[in-house]
Image (spheres, rainbow, N blue to C red):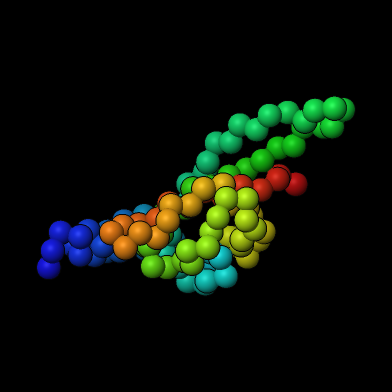
Length: 109
Protein backbone atom coordinates (compact mmCIF):
# COMPACT_ATOMS: atom_id res chain seq x y z
CA UNK A 1 0.00 0.00 0.00
CA UNK A 2 1.39 3.40 -0.95
CA UNK A 3 1.12 6.65 1.02
CA UNK A 4 -1.90 8.04 -0.90
CA UNK A 5 -3.82 4.80 -0.45
CA UNK A 6 -3.03 4.88 3.28
CA UNK A 7 -4.29 8.49 3.53
CA UNK A 8 -7.56 7.59 1.81
CA UNK A 9 -8.01 4.64 4.15
CA UNK A 10 -7.23 6.77 7.21
CA UNK A 11 -9.68 9.45 6.08
CA UNK A 12 -12.50 6.92 6.02
CA UNK A 13 -11.50 4.91 9.08
CA UNK A 14 -10.63 7.83 11.37
CA UNK A 15 -11.91 11.21 10.25
CA UNK A 16 -15.15 9.91 8.70
CA UNK A 17 -15.69 7.31 11.42
CA UNK A 18 -19.29 7.57 12.64
CA UNK A 19 -18.24 6.76 16.19
CA UNK A 20 -15.60 9.51 16.25
CA UNK A 21 -16.29 12.66 14.23
CA UNK A 22 -18.69 11.95 11.38
CA UNK A 23 -22.41 11.69 10.85
CA UNK A 24 -24.38 10.36 7.92
CA UNK A 25 -26.67 12.47 5.84
CA UNK A 26 -27.85 13.54 2.41
CA UNK A 27 -25.74 15.70 0.11
CA UNK A 28 -26.38 16.50 -3.55
CA UNK A 29 -29.07 13.83 -3.79
CA UNK A 30 -26.95 11.09 -2.25
CA UNK A 31 -28.18 9.59 1.03
CA UNK A 32 -26.05 7.88 3.66
CA UNK A 33 -22.86 9.85 3.04
CA UNK A 34 -20.38 9.98 5.93
CA UNK A 35 -19.46 13.60 6.54
CA UNK A 36 -18.09 16.01 9.08
CA UNK A 37 -20.14 19.21 9.22
CA UNK A 38 -19.16 22.48 10.84
CA UNK A 39 -20.76 25.91 10.89
CA UNK A 40 -19.37 28.47 8.43
CA UNK A 41 -19.31 32.12 9.46
CA UNK A 42 -20.52 34.23 6.54
CA UNK A 43 -20.17 37.96 6.22
CA UNK A 44 -22.42 39.27 3.47
CA UNK A 45 -22.81 42.93 2.63
CA UNK A 46 -26.03 44.61 3.81
CA UNK A 47 -28.82 45.17 1.31
CA UNK A 48 -28.61 48.36 -0.74
CA UNK A 49 -31.07 50.75 -2.37
CA UNK A 50 -33.70 50.48 0.33
CA UNK A 51 -33.60 46.68 0.48
CA UNK A 52 -33.49 45.01 3.84
CA UNK A 53 -30.37 43.09 4.70
CA UNK A 54 -30.49 39.36 4.11
CA UNK A 55 -29.07 37.00 6.69
CA UNK A 56 -27.21 33.91 5.52
CA UNK A 57 -26.07 30.71 7.16
CA UNK A 58 -23.37 28.43 5.92
CA UNK A 59 -21.77 25.04 6.50
CA UNK A 60 -18.45 23.46 5.66
CA UNK A 61 -18.72 19.78 4.84
CA UNK A 62 -15.82 17.31 4.69
CA UNK A 63 -16.52 14.13 2.69
CA UNK A 64 -14.62 11.36 0.96
CA UNK A 65 -13.68 12.46 -2.55
CA UNK A 66 -15.64 9.72 -4.27
CA UNK A 67 -18.89 10.16 -2.34
CA UNK A 68 -20.34 13.21 -4.10
CA UNK A 69 -20.58 14.34 -7.73
CA UNK A 70 -17.98 16.58 -9.37
CA UNK A 71 -20.54 19.11 -10.60
CA UNK A 72 -20.80 21.11 -7.37
CA UNK A 73 -19.95 24.53 -8.78
CA UNK A 74 -20.15 27.94 -7.05
CA UNK A 75 -23.65 29.45 -6.94
CA UNK A 76 -25.18 26.22 -8.19
CA UNK A 77 -28.16 24.86 -6.29
CA UNK A 78 -27.83 21.55 -4.47
CA UNK A 79 -29.37 19.76 -1.51
CA UNK A 80 -28.06 19.18 1.98
CA UNK A 81 -30.15 17.25 4.52
CA UNK A 82 -32.91 17.31 1.89
CA UNK A 83 -33.08 21.11 1.92
CA UNK A 84 -32.12 23.61 -0.77
CA UNK A 85 -28.66 25.18 -0.44
CA UNK A 86 -26.22 26.91 -2.80
CA UNK A 87 -22.58 26.03 -3.34
CA UNK A 88 -20.17 28.68 -2.13
CA UNK A 89 -17.02 26.63 -2.78
CA UNK A 90 -16.20 23.02 -3.56
CA UNK A 91 -12.79 21.43 -3.98
CA UNK A 92 -12.54 19.49 -7.21
CA UNK A 93 -12.50 15.73 -6.97
CA UNK A 94 -8.85 15.33 -7.84
CA UNK A 95 -7.72 11.73 -8.14
CA UNK A 96 -4.84 12.51 -5.75
CA UNK A 97 -7.12 13.74 -2.98
CA UNK A 98 -8.83 11.54 -0.39
CA UNK A 99 -11.16 14.25 0.94
CA UNK A 100 -13.25 17.09 -0.44
CA UNK A 101 -14.26 20.28 1.30
CA UNK A 102 -17.60 21.77 0.27
CA UNK A 103 -19.01 25.04 1.55
CA UNK A 104 -22.74 25.73 1.23
CA UNK A 105 -24.93 28.72 2.06
CA UNK A 106 -28.59 29.69 2.15
CA UNK A 107 -30.79 32.55 3.30
CA UNK A 108 -32.03 32.29 6.84
CA UNK A 109 -35.79 32.11 7.19
